[in-house]
Image (tube, rainbow, N blue to C red; front, side):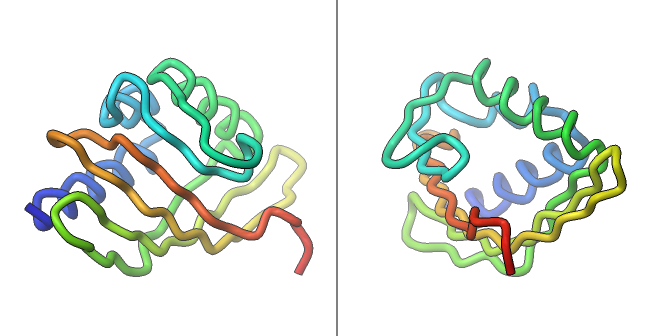
Length: 124
């Protein structure tokens, strides 16, 4: 089962890097649980439409945004922890490179939980 989930994670990042937000968002359950500093503190439920909207906005801010997987850590039958680096360039040529860690929870082949951790203070 964990191999299946790892394959799903690879597919997820492929959709991300292709900026195919619809295909990426459809990998989630109809309403998934998120922990993400960009969504505020605590647990937030998001629909597929909200996921598409969020990442479409990210692409507007950083048209070439890409994620590069550093390592995946399968954990049991339902979780994969992914360490990756997100990079992008804004229209004004400002760039960012951000190390991120996400814990994905899977339920029936779909992502039901996306707990993402990164330093969102923006200063090094």
